[in-house]
Image (cartoon, rainbow, N blue to C red; front, side, top):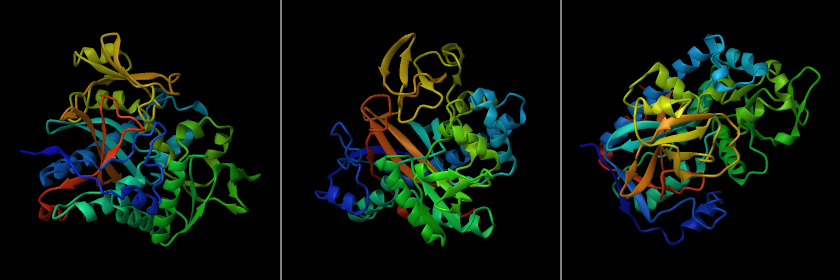
Length: 395
């Protein structure tokens, strides 16, 4: 039987000091709770990891098929609320097959069955926790067990391959979301990985970007030709500078077409194209679209919600769990509710993709059905480490 268990664990007494040394400074939320916890851990068997890898890589291909359909169909991007003025930016980015760098599926583990909650494939977070925090915890607490952190070497190798194939330039500008400690930390990690790939990585604040007379992006006198960005597409597309995106000549990681993947409109599009798929939850643009397929609780989500904001779990027309936020004005989608509690706690399986390959795990949990930005990330182990060989190697 494929197993995933939640296990009580002893935290390292000095883990906060170790986090500081790794450059992971935001381990405590504003309300005083911890964004990283070690008093529990999740234990997989190797067959569970094989299943997660297979499902993640399959879902990624299904998502790409939805993107292809949306950019080809007249009006296909309207369903994703892509502003008309930048729809050609998305179409041309897809036509060029601008390269995908990194994303993370959030999956529900329902008694061994994996269901897609959403795809964070624009500006995925939790990089320090998913790499160095998990790796250091495992080294000190993992014993003889294996683990499957986000594979930073896979990301470095991906950048090397993109440079060798001429898809990106040798200079990469790394642009965090403004005045955000988490994204500033992500920028540090991306810079280090880019440097390991032999690239020149330049930290660039959004406010320091200028536009040349020819419409190119300029940073301190240097044209920006390749960029790793943490400013989301739904905001970039609505910025006054969006008119320059089509002809600026910059390759963005992740590219404009990934605006469709981190958009919750992806969920109804997937269900419409692959109705009844075993790894999908029923989804639509009205509660009735879900209830006619799967009577019971359902979830309401704004198409651009992040960190669980403005998400409501509904029974009929009554919310039984809700999170406030700043995304309430966006259009809503509705999704079948998946009860993915383990020992009474909602557990989210984060499955990382680098390029088109599964590249590691992140576990996050919540005391109620909504997994939020403040919900803690917890470490994991994989039993039967001898069976892990080859899981991350090219196939």
